[in-house]
Image (tube, rainbow, N blue to C red):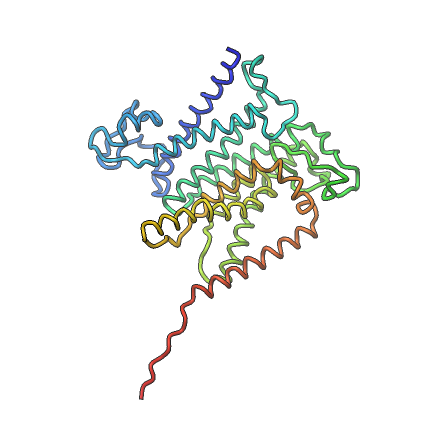
Length: 375
């Protein structure tokens, strides 16, 4: 019986995720074709008959119908099943990490479910805020995988939610504002042995430190600045890498939807995690998505699709960087809080992107063929 509150809340998080996953399937089926996501209701795309209420229950409806329309027998994509299941498990995992196990070590927000039937309301608020980010990332990744496009409605909706939420949950919340005085006056925050690590809140870090007088710790102004600067950084870092790489490569390599996706993530997490997540996402896209495609093509002896949807990799990169931040933060603090070091790193990365594009262009260019000699 002492586990009952944990079970009830965990099942509720799972069910919420299944319902959101069902709505993500609606987005994936309609947004790429610029159809309304509100009207008409769910229906078969073959016979256009409405899907019955009980047949529309997440997972159970798909299994009950064995993936086919009740009226015409047309098959439904298995994506409907996996998106619902994946979103449900993601919401459950996020609930366990943030509310039950306090993954980010929010002070004073520990839920002892054996004695308290409800988790602390601030933890529930944090969970809902971050669950919105997870849902939007999943929606963007699913649509980009299938259609090679990220509809603007998804990242711009996330931008609004992220900015508004950040104003209500400014750094260092849930730490008290006094936690911003962890460093001695006049000591740069890059000096980790002297200052110690920057306290991590719902917004992991402020946009810079020590804080400016116009954006004191714990104020909505700092939350708003964090979100806006994070969104701008997420957008411009993708656009900058896109321009450098494509200048060298000579072809389009990244879509502007990827910039919008990282812009949305920056509104939730600030500029430091999303800048790092771009490179984590590139690695994830190659290892998680491209490598299996190469292996499958080798087994089937078919050609490899040269196009790589970058949205799923970026989504994975954002989540991995976000959850690894308690471990990553002390390692990158000397870089992100020192302008000179940051400029050096940016220059090195920029030159590397340009060089990589040039090297790949040379591999793409066909060797010149000898011309026939006429009389």
